[in-house]
Image (cartoon, rainbow, N blue to C red; front, side):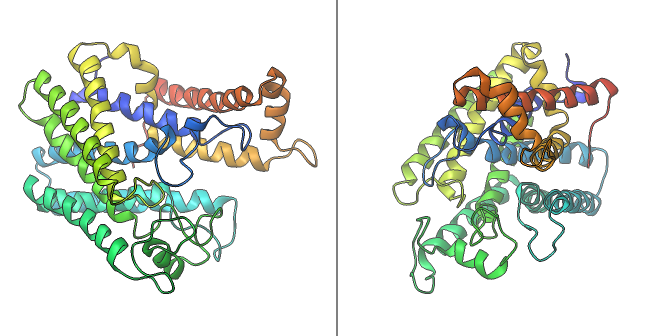
Length: 369
């Protein structure tokens, strides 16, 4: 399988691995019966599951560097490019809210933040920064959003708690702002803060900008071995920096701390460097064909996966059993080990989504918002 129109096979592959991983970790067969790497860290720290969202957002940044450059080369103006980004961002945001609203017809409680909503906001802001600044300016913006978050979380006092708290049950600045601005519209599991809330979107923008900078590197005139070396070495250095800075601010996905953004950007760069070397330099892209098929329709798979999970949890085969419960009890649980059964249920969801992606690929249909 060759890469059409100069596309990086490695980027499509990485996106596909990420969306397949997102499908896997979001759909366990039974709550509480999940292997530890397939659950989020309880609070501080990270697991395999905690790599998925920042990887996807970082990939958005890499893709943005490529797509914007192609459009500029075609003669499109900055105004045209920004309007295009605004239209895409609005559509993504509305789709994200629509997924929450579809099964909860209540405007007073529908969740406003979310994965697609955060992607939309970060994509739009990163586009504006990319269009009106140089690479040096983008580095300044990246440092600025991370520093602003750091200052807000460590120096601004929260009523009743004071400044500098990062614990789950102790009021921190991000939780305080969410509780005032998003009352009634937050994640149903917490209701008093949201993992995709307002303040934590600042370092998430930084994650996207890290991807933009990696995109510049991958588009540069460096030789393929040099690009690979820079991606891997730079990634390792960022991981080290994130780990070192965690002495002062913990790596935390729910708060999307700067240390988390830095560490995950480094890990993403390292992963892309490996995929780039194998697929684009050594020509082994065929090894990863299923993931590339996933990656070419990532948004469609994300939407379909979410709707399948919600509908299978709402549709009943009898008065007390949902379709998801019936499948787990009838097909997966008889295997004996409930952890393996839960993993099988999640892999079944991934397999169904691959069939969706493969069908779209065979038809030549690609969701481009």
